[in-house]
Amino acid sequence: MGKNLRGKNFLKLIDFTSEDIRYLLELSKDFKSMKRAGVPHKYLEGKNIVLLFEKTSTRTRCSFEVAGNDLGMGVTYLDPAGSQMGHKESIPDTARVLGRMYDGIEYRGFSQETVEELGKYAGVPVWNGLTDEWHPTQMLADMLTIEEHFGYLKGLKFVYMGDARNNVANSLMIVCAKMGVNFVACAPEELFPEENLVSMAKEIAAENHCTVTLTSDPKEGTKDADVLYTDIWVSMGEPAEIWEQRIALLKDYQINKEAMENANQEAIFLHCLPSFHDLKTKVGKEIYEKFGLEEMEVSDEVFESRQSLVFDQAENRMHTIKAIMYATLC
Ligand code: CP
Ligand code: NVA
Image 1 (cartoon, rainbow, N blue to C red):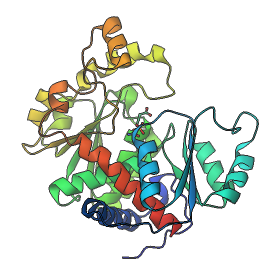
Image 2: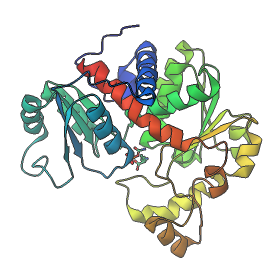
Image 3: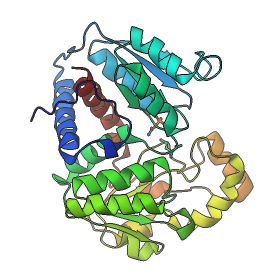
């Protein structure tokens, strides 16, 4: 297979071919098998990486840390207040300093421009751990989870319900188009993905013999779906005041028993997480007190059901991030 991705940045999936993504998925499977069998794989011993987080994270941070350690690398974590970046030092300067010390840089933050700029100046691979526009590392875990369940990707019907303009939705539309998966964005028109992105995704999909469809009708959207996917209704970086508007727009787009029953019998439920499916979180409780909603983008019943593979998906973040680092550093 042997694609050469050495030295390449991993900033968004439109920069990668379907073959590149296939290669990374196969590599992820190898790393997952090694991890499960307890086979050491310190292939990157002696290297060091730095993780820059301007937004909070559980899965992405821990995946980079564990994957880095498993590969034998030294890992430095810098929290939002833990560096000069952006406050006293520009992005190009930060990139050039870190590139002299580290072999790879992960960045999670706000604008895509920042991660692109880091990638331009660092001289070492930069990996996008989420921006307002894209969440590319999540996509490999999602595709791996789907393929593990069905045994294939091509021809499946994948339905994303919710805020179809956010980083996860944008990225899913592109990765599905690249991997031959029929993508449906099921959302109110106000939250449809940007037109130019949809046109680009449709072109990519045509090359890979699949489709990209937008619908505001949950019945039509979820009908015969193989995968139902959702994400939180208000993303990191968006103002808290927007909750009221989003709830009004998205309350009919919750993934619940009715949606699952309209999908294929063997359909699976996925969510990048974190999720508001009960009242066990601070934000969940606040929303309940203000708007009376006990569960939001997904019902607790579906989240906890046999069809929900969200924790396999979360675990797969680590295996796939390991593959990305290995492929770009080795
Ligand atoms: N899915 C995801 O990116 O989770 P974190 O925000 O916890 O990293
Ligand atoms: N759309 C969400 C994804 C979290 C992993 C956010 O940006 O907050």
